[in-house]
Length: 380
Ligand SMILES: *Cc1c(COP(=O)(O)O)cnc(C)c1O
Image (tube, rainbow, N blue to C red; front, side):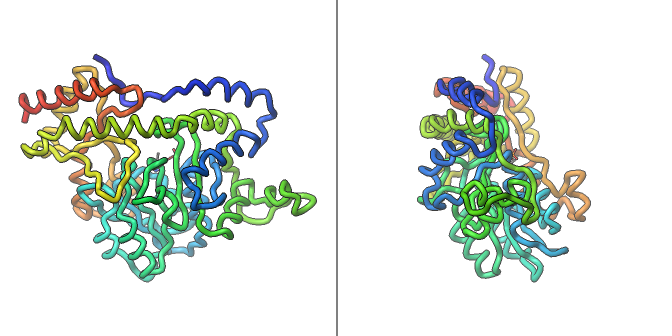
């Protein structure tokens, strides 16, 4: 048996949409970009039309941070157990990333740790909805509003995942989603920026097209377009938008299949938890997941390593995840001690992700689970 960790979901519209796109001029914000925005309106209706496609989630984060007008030494809180994108965006905007520990049930930013790290210099929080499982947003938003902080959701992994009834990415001032090849819906490289505020949205639109008022020009509001603010070139390519539009036509089916595989793992692997060999990922009542990642945390690093190599030996590709930012070569420059974030370190040592994608069958999830349970009998 050979089971890959990732497998691209192919839809029967992929080729058709791409070929039809090639008949046009590939002009930025053309027909396909418009089509994707309208497809996304079913998920993001409560953001009106205040969202835009970018060429990556990292650039969506960069744009959001740019809208925050940080001064030198302003601080932004984010989890150390994280991909580097949000920390890079803070640095680019002239701020200082301040790392926080995580919650051991969800691996999301710890609310307790956030509270202890807020200072007079703190301006924003960037929570990550790890694995497509929502942070506890009522509590997080309350903390943020009491301290006057902007919330930028890193919803990179969270397309079509919800907190109660709200789509992830629509709860903070800004939300950033990824369409990278590793994500549930993918066009190779792509992203989405959601804005709560109309003025932020309009500024972000200018930033996205070289700091110009190109949108106003195309809406007939001025007779030429020109340089109006800080900017970059962060719009998605029409070719990527064409593929994205094909992918989004299967959004509910993709989400449904992945959610089902997540449930299958939780059922089949339950004995591990009962016997204390591992903790399965938690799905709190308030979270409606999208099955982006399935992970478990073993009782020890040794057990994790033994099970991972046992799986590899059987052709099953299982993966660990982030090197915590505070112990990475770049993150070390901020002067943290390893022991500053005990849950982050424990997660780093013990977390293992198992394959989850739309080509994975329930029977395969059962087989993978059986191999793990057998591995535990050998090494546990
Ligand atoms: C994938 C990911 C990103 C980066 O997304 P890109 O679209 O590749 O820029 C950022 N943050 C998190 C949490 C991610 O999982």
